[in-house]
Image 1: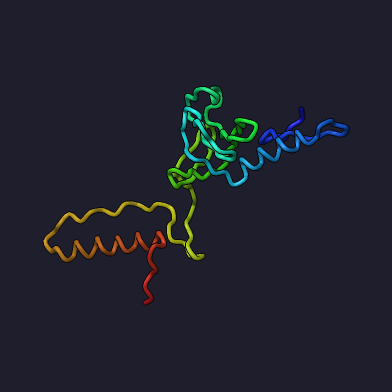
Image 2: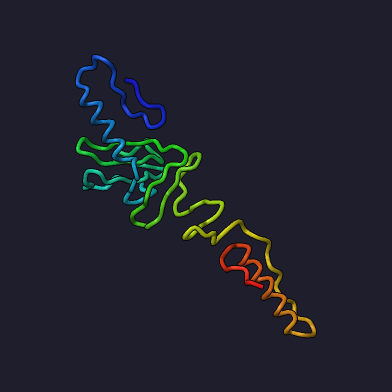
Amino acid sequence: MSATARFALPLLFAGQAQKELYHNEALTLVDAIAHACVEAAGVEVPPEDPEPGMGWIVGSSPEGDWAGAAGQLAVWTAGGWRFVIPRVGMYAWVRDQGVYAQFLEDSWRIGTLSAAILEVGGEQVVGARQAAIAAPDGGTVVDEAARTAIVALLGALQAHGLIDTPEL
């Protein structure tokens, strides 16, 4: 059987008998991976009464019908379990935790989002981590040490885009 390179979706070929079986299988798998949503991640044992369309990210030591499918997406369909081998960059919403899971290299990262910057309303609000601000260590004039720490704190907040730079 010919299949797509990334998700092994079955392809039709000229003169093929029962094309609807291959077409329906491909649609079932696309339905599972397009904007994927799973009930939970890291689950080892298949649930007893899943409904069609419900999915899970299989844990590292799966049992029963999921044996041999560690780390894959398991989706219950009218025809039983379908498994999707995740590809790098794939996302799935994890319903029970209310976070995204992303597949990177060889494992799922759950609840971690990576970005170079974060924008809200077109404005950068968080950027790369800046150097630490040294804690004030006292001194003869407390006000001077406090002001130095506050100026450094404000500078860091401005560098991260969390607050604007004041107009002079």
